[in-house]
Image 1 (cartoon, rainbow, N blue to C red):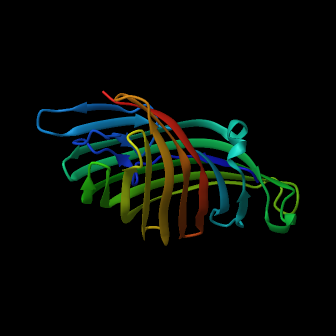
Image 2: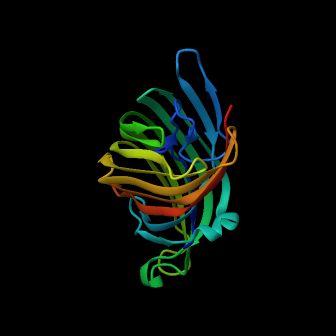
Length: 262
């Protein structure tokens, strides 16, 4: 089966060093950010963003067998029905508060293991993931910063699985689950030159899911004080299994975007 997921995340890189001449003010290195600085020293960042990710793993519903997914990010235009992603950050000196919201709806074809139970499988997946966290910069200078961060991510997943042909031909089920995971890790950025910088993050945790993790690394370029661009790679994994509902997947693919600073 092929399926695609675009996701969002502020996890780890709502990056900015507001007091520095090298400031990037990047929300996760993701596109179209708008930054406003208040008199109190707070910097606010809001950024719609784009992440094209392939999806691989297993999904299942109560009373039905697991369906195996193996898809690349190149299938996005074929599988994606709707997507919305946005990230934001408030930062003051060494302290930061960040959030990330993503929603995707996609349709894809899949297959059961060994192709015995069905000739093909139709899957419709609706996924919401929202992150809220806080961080403290343990290393900070004019070239960049490194933050220790922690937060919670809420997942809400609904899938409709329909089997065509084979032993399960004609059967269709809809099921869903909502859960919360706690995450902790690091995020930061570093200016190699006044224009080029490296940004990244790494988070891991669990709770409702047995395992929830998120890592990324990207390279950015600051054109002016108001415009920069970033490109990199991100991977997210989650393993949820409860009462017959299985969502054990890894999403990975490129991040690319342009950031605007005001």
